View 1 (tube, one colour):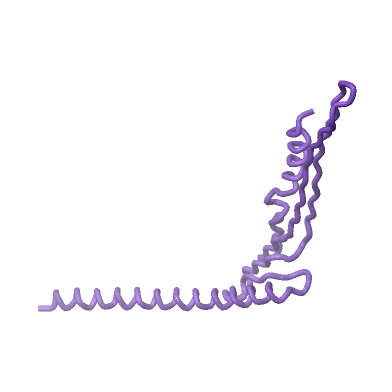
View 2 (spheres, one colour):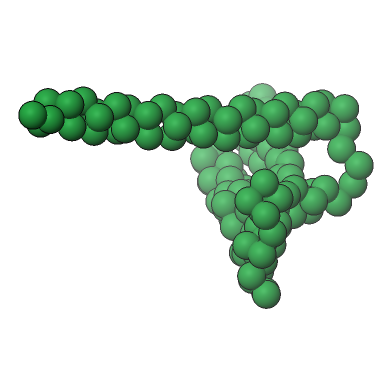
Length: 143
């Protein structure tokens, strides 16, 4: 038996667990709301091979591989089309977030606010530019 056989068999089994559908679950839709499950996937893998000495013309060897995976639900993403624009997307944690996740969540909220302000400024700037072009075109055609 070659070393590749147990490794390939084990990896094939583990890769079945690592599909995207197991990390981001199937969305659940109801009353203008979409609930998307999010999970955490852990994976461990090991392989080994050994060969014994030659005794009376017999040679011994062994190979092995093993692994394990866990899939743990950690949160839901809620998309609420009935809510106000700033409240349409929420992350609902299934357990209290650790300090790092809490900080990342707060930073992402601030980043979304900054992005919205930037888009609003861009929109106003484009409107001002259109208005100024229109005024300058009117000035050119005024007798």
